[in-house]
Amino acid sequence: MKSSVLVKSDHSSFLIKYADWVKKLPESEIRRLLRFSPKYYFSGGKPGILPVDTFHQIMEEIISEERILLKRKDSKVLEKYNYGATEGNVDLRTILANRLRKRDHVSCSAEDVLITAGSQQTLFAINDCLINPGDIILTTRPTYLGFLLPAEKFGAIIVTLPSDDGGLMPEFIDSAVKLCKQKFNKVPKILYTIPYSDNPKGTTLSSKRKQQIIDIVFSYNDLLIVEDVAYKEIQFGKTGNYIRPLKENDPENQRIAYLSTSTKEAASFRMGYSVLPEGLRHAMVKAKGYYDLCSSEFVQAILARYYEKYIDLTLPLIRQGYEERCKAMVKAIKEYMPDGSSTNPTGGFFVWFEAANQDFDSHSFVQKAIEKGVAYVPGFAFYPQFGYAVTEDSKLVRLERPTNSMRIGYSLLSPKFITDGIKLLGKLMKEETRKVPSKFSTFMV
Image 1 (spheres, rainbow, N blue to C red):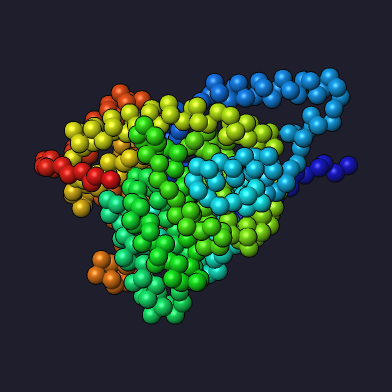
Image 2: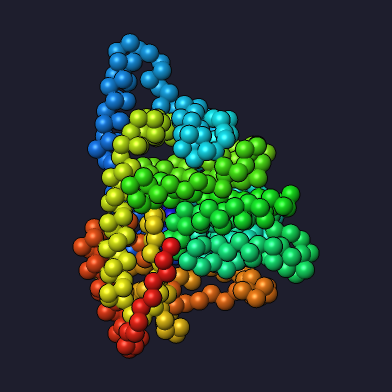
């Protein structure tokens, strides 16, 4: 009788070729840094002020109602635990549409609203539905990396425009369109902007600049504005420092895609909502059907009740808490960081810092900082890897990503931890650069 022989499979000969973008594009710097849990976490925009007790109350209300249905053996009890419409629950979309009309002056109905897995899925789907390799996107310099990476994945040519302490500089939009025609023989397809306390700098567009953007962009019939208003509800001041969106200038819902998220104004339930031109909305519903079929009905039920009954009760305290954290960070940066410049936001989650020492490399330094207990996001991550730049003398050049900047988030930690963490970060940076601090300047937003 022959003995059995265990034959080991040789997997070394198995080769699989991945899509080109897998090697071409790096992992998101924010996602990478989430793996670390230093004492002073200034990296991702994790909300640190959340109305947890409110959500407990909402869930208790829902559960109490469901117990009644269970006693009646009513099949409606299954609805929150089942598949739903790809575009989102109609009750939630109706509540959001009503709020957007009243609060943001956005002309929309429930039919115009799309629910997604966070605004990140919306950003991915916009690129998926609109961008072919070689299509051109205009955006600020720097800008949110969660939009940049999907755009580069789909082969977009990203042309960045100058920004200052007031955000996007509208006067360069016309120049960018002309330069793109000359260089690439095509016009841009998208202008991506974050008008409220933008990520990463924290700057906010003035009413004057918003009107300039509308006047310029609407003069072209083939350029879509993608307005990302993730931080619209986190504006400081007694009344929330309310600023009207670009979208109010689009009553026919044809020229602007308006994107928001529940993460900042509620909690990270991974639910985004948007108002989209009809054709784009239909395309994105189709795309979402491929991504995840539908969003959680239970989560949508929680948020429907939150937006209908509770949001305006919780937001004032949430804003106040973030404002205190922002002030603590701005003060600590001025006091403890090395020579450089920073923004002074009027809302949102982030401060942008640029070291005066141009040779300082925030990317290589971040690992050293993490080992000592403090984390931030290196500024290079907020520039396209293979993009272009419209210069302030209106030339189109290959973009060189600066290394001396960083995004520092104040949303997660208390004011005391923010002060202590910035003090440590400043000490480490000064040791790294061996540079004596000089006069500090602050960009007022």
